[in-house]
Length: 333
Image 1 (tube, rainbow, N blue to C red):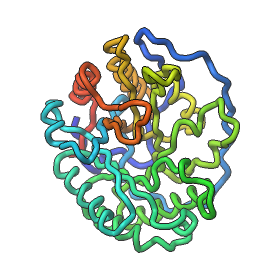
Image 2 (cartoon, helix red, strand yellow):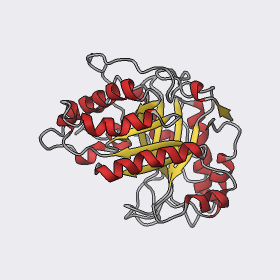
Image 3 (spheres, rainbow, N blue to C red):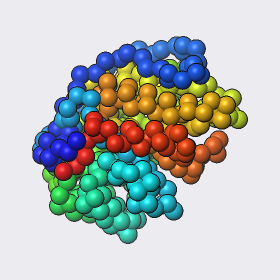
């Protein structure tokens, strides 16, 4: 499915979401039910300019961008040849140094020229508070201005999975939210086709945790919120097998009607149940299509994965290829 750029993901709009639980249809059941937390209303915050409605958000119901992240040492072109279909979304990560900011812009241009929606991430060169106070405006504009001329929609994430780095001066949830507001405001003026998407981890919304308030991390001004979801199970770690939908539901209760971009997701293969990971992937895509999810990026890598690789192999890779070739997958024009 090819959609013209002006029709891509019209900002702030989304298909109506349901909250029906989706479980993996393979043989391994989800773990027992866990306690739930009742979301609190997000406090009112100062408004920022509404971005022009030409960036990522109005999609036909049941459609989404589908792709993956691949480690730097693997050839994306070669993998796409193996899949038989180009990715509809390419997930990439960068550092805040000046040269890497230029690489981020180049990657977006290259992805767009090849019919992929870029979803790029970078950390800030200073604290979240200083970015919020405008001290990194030149750094942001050095990316947003050229991205505004790139000729297509871009998903831009500023400090993916911020929970890992929170706690120091200027690095509290309130600072993160303020930084996102600043970036959203800057992008609206310079690059209306860039959608700033804050990406949080699922464990922030895990109902068994009582040491974190998910509401403090939410960004009301974000037209799309991001979420990472992994099935924690591996053959050796003893953790429960969790379906994509069972974990997503725990976050959707807090995110409401806001469209969701899945910044990363993954499932390891169970050697005693061949094909179960493939079924997990198919169930994940079905859940996404039935809910408020507008993009999915599989983490096809073994980097930073001490309990086992997330790489797609065998039947799981075949399932991913089949999903990628589906007619519900949206691709930039």
